[in-house]
Length: 87
Image (cartoon, rainbow, N blue to C red):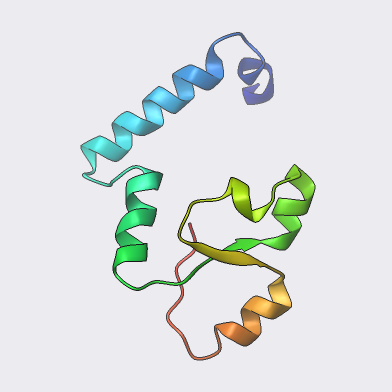
């Protein structure tokens, strides 16, 4: 049933509006602000190589603070012993 509802006109916009309200109600910043906070706090940000390739994205398409697009094996090397958060 959810797949059929998602195909209805306007459902994407309605879902986005609903999720933004839920984030606001929980006092969680929207993704661009959250990325900015993390970047300014010294976090390292990388894009996923597989996702970027599948969507036809380049580094120029990503948030300014993203250091690059890396593979899962690159990430495992870079993050050894680090605190990690996925968004």
